[in-house]
Image (cartoon, rainbow, N blue to C red; front, top):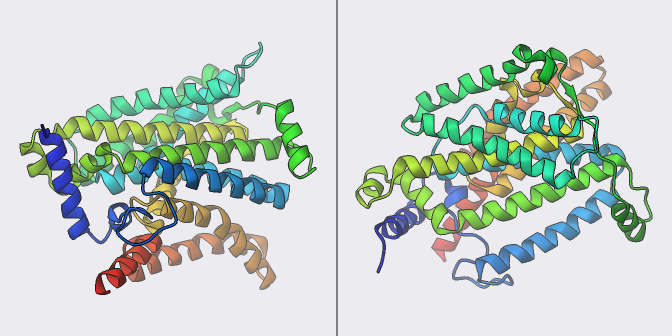
Length: 380
């Protein structure tokens, strides 16, 4: 017997497939191999995603071993941006909720990591620390999600904005525990022996702490994207689309709108917590200055530039956040600007890129490409 939730979810999926909104086309387009055309990938979603995960793992090892320590550090930075932005694009692209507070949720994950690794005794295993950071951020996200379940659009954005502004400030009031303005230093764990043996066997390079943290960030990113990709293609993802596109129809079909919105917020908060934990390990510091409103806005611009609801778009938008500023700064220095002027040039160029993306690719780069691909396929 078909349940009303399934029926509404299917209807929502059909509606979004027939007439996808321009901004979320990245989330609504079928995944590779799911369409009627020929594909080398398996048609089963889980097998297809497992194969992509395996290929991406091999590609990640090759990339990290072929680049120098500075690029390894940049790739680690890319990983925590993409993890947090991946959760945000599920919340905004699939469920239609706007959050400006994900920087604060990253702070929860980062401070949890710093506290668990900063004790005098033997530190906990790294997987346990990362899991604890995810659980803590998930609990905070659940509280915020319940409180904001009835809010929409600018009201929800305003509520999460207050979270982004207020939560990092708690470090100033609990100075003895959270370190105040200076924050808490994070003792990054050393690379285990099996990792050193693996790197020695693969490339012969030295297994530095920077390389180890780059691998930790990359593995967290791949695992997060694998889970999110399967979630998006499941009944849960279809129900989120139904809630986003047809609120009234979904409610008439028996879907609890508030419950599904809270679930989306919880999943997104878990990703933000993991992103914050990786950030604390890479930066080796958890301080209020690292989780300002600018971080939340940067995550939002990353998913908008890449394409709402698209994990590939998240990766592209995060790469722009990491690689574009130093590239523009170096270009400005080469053109004769001093260091200060060259550093000020980077935000200007990033803003220009954002404006151009909104004008010429309103669905984001990946969303626009998918839009044109779908249009070309429909004309055949």
